[in-house]
Length: 75
Image 1: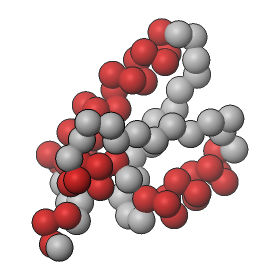
Image 2: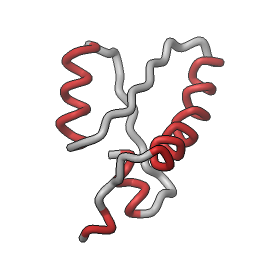
Image 3: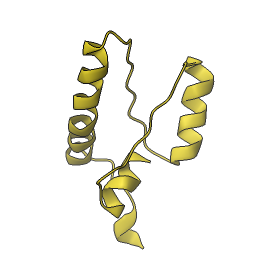
């Protein structure tokens, strides 16, 4: 379905940033080092690519409470 495909535009990027900023702030307040990255494309491929580049200790991905389209945007 065409409506389920994420659109890379300023509105979408602003929404994703807003969703990500709150948990990032909580983790940083807990004393954790947090990096955030916004990439468009195949979610699984992008996550694996970032993991290879960063060599992180952990990667958190979540979509709790979001509709189908918004979950798709978050990967």
